[in-house]
Image 1 (cartoon, rainbow, N blue to C red):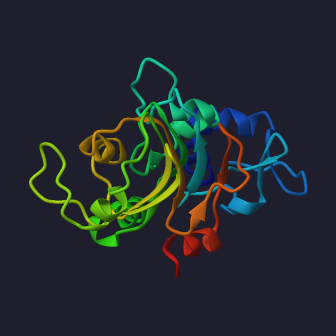
Image 2: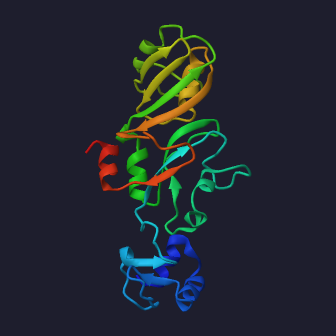
Image 3: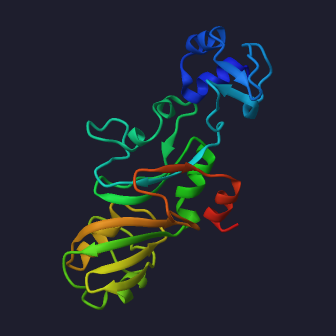
Length: 233
């Protein structure tokens, strides 16, 4: 791939925009030497205004999603892409959220431009565990742990029961719930099925990846080691 096309695909601008960057001497190598549009592509050696290029295609990001943001790119309110550099919206292949968290749910969200990786994460057969911390409107009844683990709980409007899920009570109105599938608003609907209401929901972990000390609204790019942690390889 030509250097111009590669930089344009990373969202830095149209090919014409990138051509102008070359003409203005803004694109250099790590040693500060000006590069030209027909120079060989060496991603790690390219600098724009002295800064390294964003990660190449195959990108995987971890984002600490705050409440009040949505995973849609068309929502009139604040979206998760507002938390990333603007050029990340323009990448080709496009950057997509791996599944979704609703507006009122915070926590770990993954984004990638790797279609195969996205499918591997969300595919039902992967059964990748997702861990949520739920704050409830009412006290736990006491039978939720057994019911959620039974594999017999049927949600309203569904035709198949849920896979067994693990509930860990933390307080009268707080619990940690581990799911192995991802149905629509599943955590909220599970507690609704037992007569309770989720007032706050936070996703702590996906597979072997946890937010750890990543502040709300912040993100980081993940490397090959993190991918192994994700799948427990």
